[in-house]
Image (cartoon, rainbow, N blue to C red; front, side, top):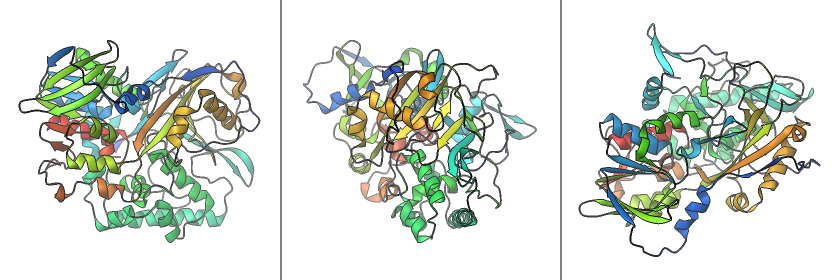
Length: 549
């Protein structure tokens, strides 16, 4: 957290929670069949609309041509941040074009049975000073204020205790333990490995600076060395092979990046710990617990605040098919889903707040740096399942129900409880949001898009039945959201590739002061893909700087 920040939540055991979303692989069904009463289905529409870009396009005259000063193409966190920045500059003549029916990208929200729930990212850590644009947003929204010279965060929006627990089968049997690092009954050899990893993280932090947003830390030879190898290989070289430590770190990588330690780079694997508070090993020097902001609908609460003031400038159901820079203006051709017609916007400037592979496809005559970056990026697909329960679940022994609940050795990344933030003590229906990533599967995206929703329903219920045998009997509905290109996976070499190179020959590739905004001519590019790290801080900062440019 930033220097001078003050929070009063109870401490929690160290360990990153779900930084964006997800897990990997699935377990056998364990003999648990989902009863017919568990209805539901897929709730996503974006991938079917987006696939129109892959089909041969017949040039069609636009049904209507309109003019505006700025077009923002993409309504995720980056696009919404760009819109806010334009309004801060006094620019009101702009439109934001979004593919989905609601803006927010990976931070959209939904509801089941009247209970709000996230469709993607579900929390925001209290930002450090490197994320000063996010700090300003939180102050604007009334989430933090100065008290006696110190920053104090609104308790209603900080995650309530207990925050995290792990279902772990240790030497003393299976049960829930506090925190996500396996500690219940582990031996001295495991504890020694935890201490060794904590010391290794401290050495890395002293040798090079890490930041969030990542571009605010100068790239060094050590960064490049870490980026050149997998996190698993780096851990092997350090002699860190304890299975409990390796499970935890693999979970952290899947949680942050949608792929495990054998896939992501050592730079990425260490980044979360080194850019914030290190790694706290049991029995060692305890670091302050990381406070997080969360809501029943996850980060959809934040994107709703950002979208609210836009009014008629926000256009949803818009598939951007062509962005072409002309002599006097930029043309943006858009397929309007509702009318089934092509629309054209003419603007003096366009902010392309789209994933790299989409931007490279729609920008006519895409600049070399965009084509190179798009060719380098690999995306992890995600699955987010929201499960409505008619009543609370029976629980196994150990730590009480928490906001974040993870199963040791599980294919998924566990679930969060939408009712955890409520102040109503009476038991009642709730929604559990379960996350799973397929970034380690070569055909993960195909499986995500081709397998029926019942496959995922049955697999998830089987996995959750291990700590909750009554879950199938108490579940009423499951709605599944698929993110086919959810986040950029920082595989070895990716961070080095994505950083702008002098050979690109574009003086305006990055903002001189912030080194955060990619631009060329009348086009600016803003998306978390440019960081290789799909988190709110990255997307918001890049969108804000693009809007301010």
